[in-house]
Length: 378
Image 1 (cartoon, helix red, strand yellow):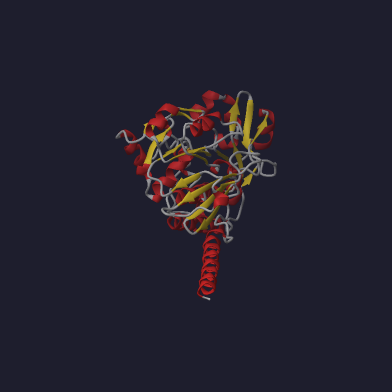
Image 2 (image 1 turned 90 degrees about the horizontal axis):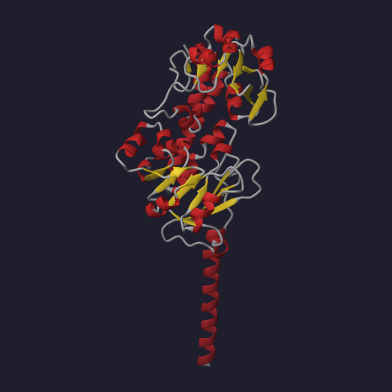
């Protein structure tokens, strides 16, 4: 009888143990909601002890997703997820490969974890430039050919890279060398708030999700309130954009990031009805025919003065916007080494871009705003 009782007790204990194991597993695998609102190429799912970071659009036309498991200290990863790269968080050191990553690090207060960057002269931010000048951020080659030997010697916790297609030999070599690499697809986003939301990508890597959410919520609030203000405009001025390159004129297509800004700023961008998210190639004759009388000319390439434009192509002075000195460029404001501030900060701060454009097109709506990215060419 005693043997039977012991057997029953053991069996009950075993059932209880199995049930506890199942419940513990359920805590980690229960379905959760994607925390991303606007970005099309990023998904974040938070669980107890870990997060799943999914990059769904690492490059245009990508047909594969990349899943990464961000493991917190003592976090338990379910067996079903161990097939994916596991990245311990919070990071202590990082290498990033685009200047668009710098603002997120600074806004989250983790810029001192940056240990490497390809061609540091492109970085314009004064805060990160101090780290570079003090030797705390090393050169790691070029994006298309990162210096594997230097990176192995540095042994960063993570390298944040990007791909232009499914052929990424540099990334493959780094991973074969035992380095952890993650794709970032912020540059493929087309909506202003979609790009800005990638700050949550970095927030997840540092265990600073709440801080990243707060920062983005403030940016979202500023953008939407500015968007509402723009709708009070009484007119929509016509706008030309782009410039000549090798006998062809390149203008933003109507569904592109740049074109959406001009739409949100209540302007009549002359190619707003075209399909596509890249650049439209046009002969000069087509552009002069459609845009000769355009009131404004925004983003005329990398020119920083009207004289520089005229020296490059005398035909530019045939446009009314040029004659009336209503040409605005993002290329004037640069860092100490020549890096363009707009390229670095505009993806993270679309609210500043929108305010600039409204100040240009509808100055009466923002009388106290001083242009941050764009400057009037003289």
